Length: 67
Length: 142
Image (cartoon, rainbow over all chains, first blue to last red; front, side):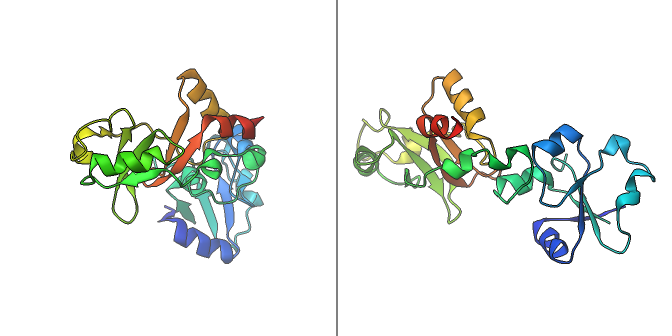
């Protein structure tokens, strides 16, 4: 299970070169996303699609809101 | 692995930098002005009326606390009353508000559909950010 974090911790992780992953559909990602985030839509998330991630760096996933 | 549980909307309402198609679109938050008259629940209608008469807006907003949590609105027409009445007695509680990350174009459209001139901009928690005029939003969206 991912560790839940809020903005302050997110900013710390970004400063520590974390990889940001938006799991929303592509059209929502294209509309706007956090700087540097990549798009791995949840419905398409597989072991193969996740290979783009660098295992040596922290990974932060995010959706639209807490719900 | 971490989960930024407040999500993208949390980032957007804080008006933090973004990338993508909406990055260059003006938001209602960027156009909100912080010059609306604000008052406390116990402030007298007469004093608020005088301040509204000198302001660019036909209303005042009732707020509380250092974070200016929005409680209500006092339209100029409501202020034409016993000057000693407290704002709490005559305010319109819980006015409609918009979030700062909404695009100027979308808010301008909504205001036009409802024939409204002003958008009150707050955070999701209800902290007052300011007021945006439909004219300013339409000009920015053009």
